Amino acid sequence: MNNWGYVISAIAIMGLVTFGLRAAPFLAAKWLQQHTLVLRLGRFLPLAIMVLLTVHTLAGNAQSHTNGPWPELAAGCTVVVAQLWRKHALLSIVLGVFVYVAFRNQWVPLA
Figure 1 (spheres, one colour):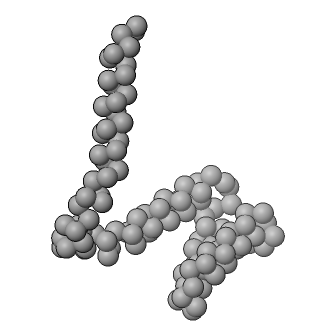
Figure 2: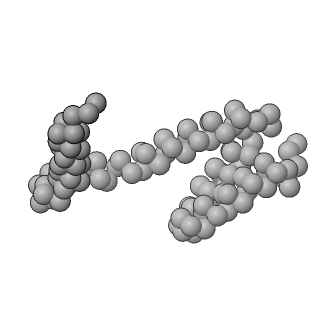
């Protein structure tokens, strides 16, 4: 453990690898902008990730309390309706959070 040369070289190598990984997208930007697979992923992947995160969060939170899935379902439906109605993401999120907090804090009585 007293071999300072080994420690310094390991840190230097880790730094170079980290720098290389961070610089790689910039070096390959021209190729990435023209590749069909990257373009297809850029079009569909963000939506798929958001749907998976939302479903995972709603299912996980629904199991964490005894009221059932009603607060999560009400908030999810509110977000969908608000998004279809106004097509404004911030408004949809704020309304969904408000409905969820209202149900979880029992400002709105559950049947």
